[in-house]
Image (tube, rainbow, N blue to C red):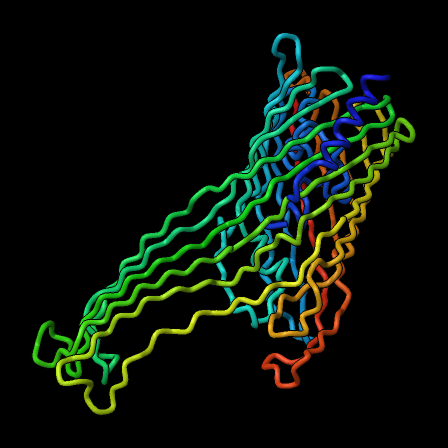
Length: 455
């Protein structure tokens, strides 16, 4: 028992020593039906492809090769002042696989997992900081997620794992050239060229699991910080005239040069540390508890930073009457966001209600409480958010050795999840605020299913 206690102390020390560490749909709605139904409280009790998110170390517990595929859809009903905000649903395919083996007698496993939206790989949206938006749900969850992990089990009571998660960022260049008429803008002749690239950005995750006894296990997981940058550069070079744009004619006044650079953190994921435990109360019933620390205080608001360089030399003889050249735009002042770190508790239970020689049936339930990290929006900013109570449930069926050609098992799981965001009231300090006071709240429904074939 002593080595196990020392290992447990080591992973606890790692949690306390971690440097300060939700921009994907898995954080908000879970990954896999079994895990979602249990409120995401599976850090010490996961062994399929979803371990790539919940705890990579769990991959080392896999009994054989398996492949999973599923689908989920989360529909938002979020409103302000009684009017639905039209937050897009989050929906898409979830899939993954686990390949176990042994190296020098030590069990190991490689796992991959993916969430692929069925209508977009990633959405780019940068809003003004005074425009109301559901900060945690409107844009952050509309993107592709892909994870690759490796795990080993040097002893039967210790599993270690880690890997990388890949997500997408955008880099773009916009070039505009031609001629435009200062007096008749619609008569201008301008050409544009756009060069955009979707880049992959990676962040690490690590996990450990210690089995103190056959009925009790602990886990520690670290997920790294991640940000998705949206950088767009624009160059404008055009002749300015007071007549039809026909190239270099006597009506040409000057040449306009404009350099524009926009930089936005389109999505930001603070680092996280998860401490979890799993307790097998009986052979048919076990309960799990996870607590996640999220380093929200490092959050960067998704407000665009714009820098410009404007060059419009005056024509010979000065500007004609009635024409006033534009001046250098004033820089945007980005106000700091009030946001604090949070501890997020997760609780889950699983009951094996049916145990037959050929199949098993499971009933699951879970709860999660997300206290909003965003402070009161009494000033000019409008990052709308509310506390979230998440209640989940699900069913599962496992077929044992269903055919001679399939010595493993077949599993089918379904889940339902309800997120309730109680109504909040925002009262502005400035009575002349353009947005004014408002109320906000709502709920989110999430349903899905996952099938797994094990060999």
